Length: 144
Image: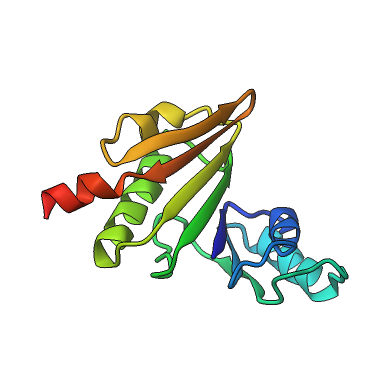
């Protein structure tokens, strides 16, 4: 499952639907941007589309409960450090409910240290303007 945190008008959602995710979800706190995203999803047509289940949720990312499925979480520098820490903690809590792969793709990673400082995450890849993180399952397993 693909989740775009701070999904705005839904552009990343439409791009992600080209991959065979079970579902593509956007979480956006701005009602006006959420409405635009819903409109964009409704009119989107692409013969290369591999995921038909696309949705946008108007919600606070710090309160959004991620589904208990393998996750690819997408952050395009959507919020500040405090909110980032809360979202990462929520992902860790979700992992504790059901162990599964959880990845974070972080574009313009100005707060990447807030993820790196946490013992449950490691950086899988880093480029000029992005980082990819994954939870370290062995850390959680050792704690239980």
